[in-house]
Length: 167
Image (tube, one colour):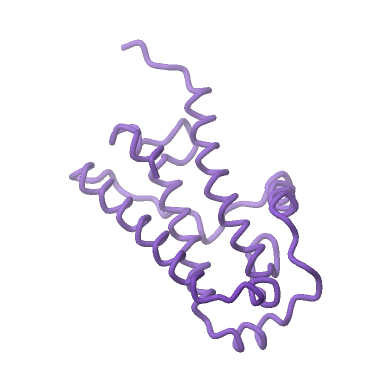
């Protein structure tokens, strides 16, 4: 969250060329983490009946990352997890504070939900991912770590490639 906090409010709320604004990226990450948290709060037995038991060991971080990158290269998009367009806020500082408060709450809720899972169940139960299919809980958590990093790095890369204004 330090990076997002380091951006000026106007920069945070403004799209980067034709790409999402940093605020939109944060809202997207918040929305996706809330979905993971919701899945983690479902009773284990319900997940078993809904999505089955994992038939293979959890894949490592690098494998989950590469599967996601491949899906993006094939044209996959955020779909229903894309941030909804918003009108320019009447109070940019309040809008930013609200976005970041919701994000911090989503991170805290996810951490709390993870704490209720025994280590052994992380590799036994699965959750559905809209692009990657059924992932073990561990793989979903690895994806979530990478997904947050991916969006942070995308924003940083886009800022590095946008010509700076001289006015």
